[in-house]
Image 1 (cartoon, rainbow over the protein chains, first blue to last red):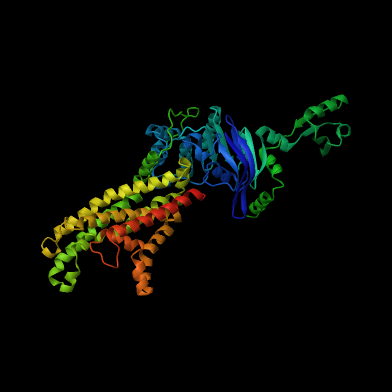
Image 2 (cartoon, rainbow over the protein chains, first blue to last red):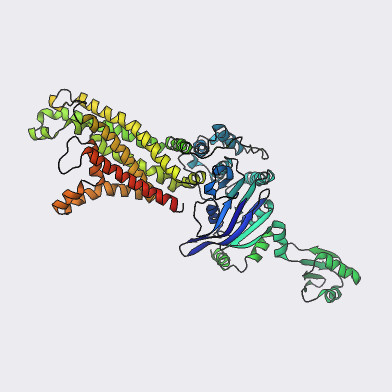
Length: 307
Length: 276
């Protein structure tokens, strides 16, 4: 369980995290979604107290991270920035972390096997590929059997097999009752793994809801109808909260009503329907809709288009 | 590269202990011994501490016959025995800086502070482990340097000095203690500066640039101030003779310990306050 209240962080004049209030609950995968530079990594650093907040507060399992007797048992984190000495072997890296909590060598071996680094465990971690580095990061995160697992962009650098493994890992960690908090700038990845989403842009919270609700809210009630009596149906449906757009002579897009309402209205007037389809936006579209007013996000888009 | 283990089998941990100072010290020992750069720096320090006096003694012994009386008078057996200290202090200082800046430059510090978010136990453990390791290596090294250089100079009675001669044992062991303190000082500088090049430059500035600059001061100021500088006060730990322009071994040693304590205290305050 992670609880943030009015969490704020300034770096000089720049506000990286702006008045964030949210709760990350156990037993589900919570996605932390936002464009690059929106404050996700900073928020995670504030949770671990690597950085001190400029305002507000954040606790893990009811206490400041610093006040836990066995921090690695509370939160296991994989940060986006590389957090290991390249001159040390994977095994020694994990061992040094384990020893701070009196965790034995057998646990280190167990995790090296879990992430599939057995063959390279004694090699210097500086020579690891990005994917191998990510897996070592996962091993460090799980070392203390944490009740909260916090991963910043965990699929970065993973091959398709690794991505698949990561999705399953996140789900099984949540199924075990752990709190799972995963950041990503990839909406499609979150759609596949996250049950709940916290969306931020420019350090501010934009949305905090289930993934399902996020998509349906952003897409609104849009229904595609195909009927030979298009004019008749349009006259029947149009109202103050309903708009109808003619896509083709016999195809309408109805905004503001559910498929069920459209179907019932048609039946009442005995209008023949050939197609009645609720339109669901993809998570990408939902994300675009919600961050449309976000100035910095638009700037990023322009920059991306220009480059 | 082996494949991934099946998921759904994330092993639980039967027992998780609390973070204690002793456990953090064990962790720091693992970190120190598992880096090649540490092993090389320490090896270099041992080699220089012993090798320089041996070389110096050989050269002195073989050229003794052709040296002027003035040159001969300049050769003191203890200076020869401890000639390596002035050189190996650089290896020790670089390692002291690296012990902490190496974590910042690689990002390891984030892992270290995630495991020990109270942070100070990491600083204490680093200083303690580094001091113990340096002491354990440098005491035998200075003893080896003393006895081997004496053995090489055995033909020249005037260059023989007994270990039990007043001040000799203190000077020889003082050389090792000085190196340990230099390491602690450098570690503190590293923690304050958080950058390897900057840390080494700061150390070199304090130890090797400021002392000669003192000569631009009026002689009476120079005389009053210079003996309190870190290098000058620390050097008294392994100097056999002292006069009005220098502090006593105990006085100099205490001043130097004071500098180390100040640097480490400042490092501790900044470590807790600053973002990582």
